[in-house]
Picture 1 (cartoon, rainbow, N blue to C red):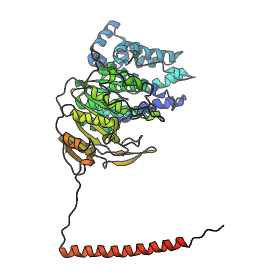
Picture 2 (picture 1 turned 180 degrees about the horizontal axis):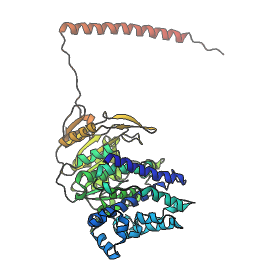
Picture 3 (picture 1 turned 120 degrees about the vertical axis):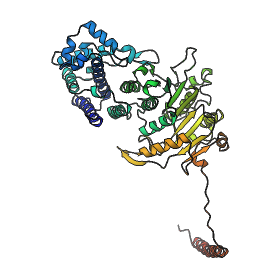
Length: 541
């Protein structure tokens, strides 16, 4: 079976799980995503464990009945095998394997057996697979699932198990990012619209994520890189970045206020062979209480930072707390004011940009999605940030994206690239005319072709000047333009000249004069007519 066929089968499994939820009254329920993602993850981890055990013990791999052969092993033998599996593989007690759970499906109170199995797997892998809150609490892999069903819990859990047993992930564990990125997107596609409320937009379009990663990662000899997203969502940007660097050559760090986002990011890390980074995934408020710190208490700095922060958000409850001596360096340009009305319009993205600048390592690079208005604003915090970027010589460039690149917002966006080692020229790209408009549900979005994506990446990385598309400017040029980062303001104004004879020139001028005389005469006639009409108006009681 090829990859495309297996992708289709995997998506069919996801659809089957959703169908079970719908049949038990959980379709479009707020808890459906918890059930779907946890059951899917249990199956994935179960198959990964079985796959690893078979690699270590060929006799198990060759057995006609794996589960029967496994039962012949003593507890000590199984413990020895489990000690040899890779650190990114969850450990399963034999009784918690899917095959054993399947055997018990007709027992009384099967839902309790089902839940206990999930909780035991979570407990056994607590140290590696738990996400931390900023207060130090652990969010474990699994929870009681049957509780979300009011009636027929046993049959509900049985239906879920029966969807899992005829499917196996074992043949695709050698697959990499592209396969699992597609599967992950399909898995959570129904839960990334308004599911994060005002706090999270789970997806950044793949075109944007790809461009950000490809323009950041130009050095192929990278090792032990630290990658950070202070508003990670489910991790689309981080996964693309890690894939560009090499999953085994980087460590992921993140923070996000949404517990749901953190749980989905953990799932994404597991699917993409980045389990070693789960301990760095923090659920908490980055702006108010940044978690990642050095032993000295100073904020940690990172080699690569990516972010698609929320643009507008009400943070009035803790705005005053941010304006303190402790945050003076971090929020050097200031804290956005609290508006008298519409507090949810507070420009929180300005705080994220400043936070990213503050947490970038000495030779670090960053890519941030910003509203396009940021790159030309002529006053306030926006301009102060741009001035700092230029004065500190840490600006790499800007790519202004097409409108509706995000189907869920009408805000035009640009990608702001930072590079602390870029002391020379800056590349500005206007990609607003690229892409094809398509319908996405009720919304319209713009989709870039692979060729257009690569065009942006190539032009940015080689700093190529292309007519009406890109310019390369110095920091002094930017200062002269009042710190504008809009490519269009640097494009040459072209005046087309046509060679004509003196006789042709004279003829054109005479024609202009003649036309003007006619127009002036018509204007005077019209003026008299209006005055006459006005005099004829009379007031009648």
